Every structure is written in C-alpha cells, then in structure tokens.
Image 1 (cartoon, rainbow, N blue to C red):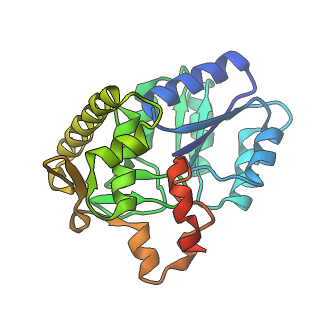
Image 2 (image 1 turned 120 degrees about the horizontal axis):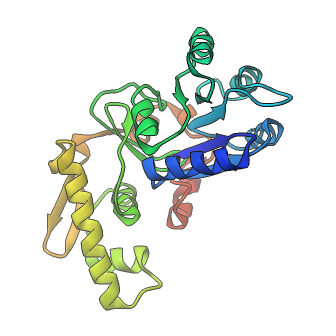
Length: 253
C-alpha cells in the first residue's frame, strides 16, 4: 500500500509517520512538509491513502484535497486536525473518507482504515497485484507481522502453481546463508498461515512436503478481472515493491 503523509510541522509529521508505520508496517510511506511538494509528487506517482493536516499555511487541507482529487479521483483522503469539534464539523461537510483528531496514534489510524475504499468494494478475500501487491478482507487491508510473509503470498500468487522450498529460499532470501534462509522461510510460512487463519481463510494457503501454493478458488483478484477483459486495471505497475516481479511486467502491456 502506498501512503502519503502531509503536515507542515515537522514534529507532527514525525508522529504521523510513526503511527502509520505502526498501523501499516508493510506500507510504502512518502512524507511532505509542503502541500506543493506533495502535489508535484502526485503528478507522476499514485497513492492509496493520503493523511493530510487540515490547517496549513498557504494552502489548507480543503484546497489541497480538491487539487488531489482532480488528479487522483479515487484516492482516499483522511484529514488530520488538532482543532477539535469546530474543525470536525467543517471536515464532515466536505465528505472526506475520514478524519483523525490529534494526537495521531496507531489505534486511530487502524480505526479509520475500515471506512476507506481501496479500489474494490468486494466482500471476502481480494488480491490486488497491479500497483503494489496487497491483500484485502472485506475491503480492509490485511496486515502481516512479518513482511516476508506477505512477499511469500505475492510470489505464490505470481507463480500460480506449486513452488518448492528451495525455489522460495533462493528468491526471497537470496542474500542469506542456506540454513538461515530455511529458518526465515519457516517463520514466514507460519506467519502467513496464522494471518490467513485469523481472517477465516485457512484454505487459501496449501502446504505439502517441501512445497507450497495458493488455491485461487478462495479469493478474487484484479489479475483475474484483467484476464476477463478489464484491461484498464493495469496502469503500468505489477507487484511494484518486488524486484522479482519485473519479468512478468511485459505480460500486461
């Protein structure tokens, strides 16, 4: 998931960054002190959600949000305010995807995520492979305690078949000693299994002796929608956070 954080006060921005990283440990976070810098960045990049200070000098959150929506109409914008009930009433009239009253915390970030839309309102389990790889359950991003567990799932989705333990350790832990790679993979496998079990989807992940796969019957995905004819879903990026996915990029051009 790609997150943009904007606050004109450096200490407040640091708090916001820390809270977002705690709530979404796998997220790619870009931070800005000036709205003009953020707008320039968004001319050539995308974001799934923007956490934006409501009161800023020069360009307030209202104007910033309007300009962002003109470029990225589907992006989620969450206003962050320290001005209490009056600001909240004003924010509500703008119908944003959410707001947070300072001080920002991990719990507040997690609470507002449930109100956001991430390109699919489908219920159940949904895999998004275009852009950054993400997993959603009932429209809410699924978090992983171990980042490599998420990458393991991404690789199995990309593979669309059975992968051996040797292959996975070579790809996911190419810079590690073999004994360490095997141990790290075991941790990732355990984390992936526990994460899927926690959302009631244990059948997605299939384990056999020294081999792993995913069962596509138990989740929907943008890849399948693309194959069914919705070619607009591909906007130039595929599992963008993983270098091993680059080889398949040409399949969608």
